[in-house]
Each structure stands twice: as structure tokens, then as C-alpha cells.
Length: 118
Image (cartoon, rainbow, N blue to C red; front, side, top):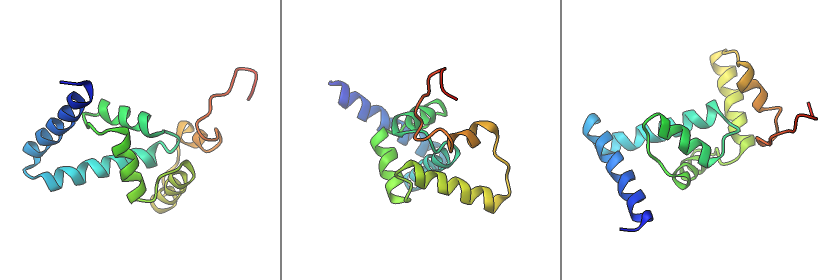
């Protein structure tokens, strides 16, 4: 079996395992989509790969292209839109951003800066 087929199989098995816990595939898909949206708003500077890896750490298997599809369906496909969603959530919930979330808006598109820049 090729590597691509193995990855696809693992993703499908992960979804089916989640479905077993919940009881239906439709609800499992909704839960995964909700987690993708939450990560996009929580960390707007994350790209598709990083978001997929973060979700993997949380036990949710979804590909980077799957992340992209969810973002496009929910109008979160770029950093500016994800940042606006974070700002709307802050205004709605009245939450205070910690330093890490607040700095994402100042860093640009997640670019790393050398030690010679502030």
C-alpha cells in the first residue's frame, strides 16, 4: 500500500472511531468541523499544516486540505478573515486576549523575525 493510501486509511479509521464514540457519522463530521473553526479563531496566524498538526495533538485527524475546505466554507480562508473572526469573538464574549493571541495580530502573517528586529 502506498503512503497516500495509508494516510487516507488512517483518516477514515479516525473518523469511524470518532463515529463509534458519538453514534453517528454526521455528528462526528460536525464535531471535527467545529474543532477546525475553533483552532482557526484561537490561533489565526496558524496555516493549514500547523492547524492540522495542532488538531492531531488533540486526537482529531484531518488533512491540511481538509482544514482549507472547512475554512473556505466558513469564510476563514486567510489570516485577515481569521483575525476578524477572533476580534468578533472577543467583542461578543468580552474576553481578554493573552499576550500570545494579542501578538498574532502584530506579527504579520506569522513571519518569524530575526533577533535584530523588534
